[in-house]
Length: 132
Image 1 (spheres, rainbow, N blue to C red):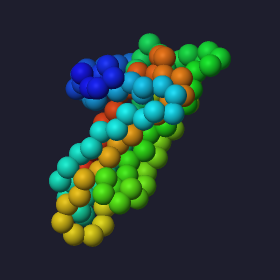
Image 2: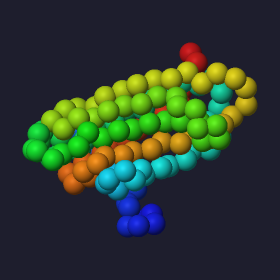
Image 3: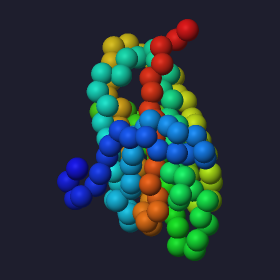
């Protein structure tokens, strides 16, 4: 459990009939953002952010539901690396990639925000893949 009662966990969830082992995240609601920092991500890798709204909440287009905004940035400089939006009613996962240049390693920060966080439970995967 994180401060403020926010829960982050590595769990099995279903996204459009596909079981996935992922990070369970629920945005805190309003302008607040849930932020997770990942250290020692090597340069020269490709970051892949893949996310979807968990099955039982994905299909709803009810009034008042908010689009979930995900962003990955360089934790030190704040430079935005990639963004992803999950609108209400969007089933399945969406994916975006970004190649990290430079040398050494860095920390990256994943943030999640939704104005209305009810029924916005997410299954999120952030991976770093070495060049082939």
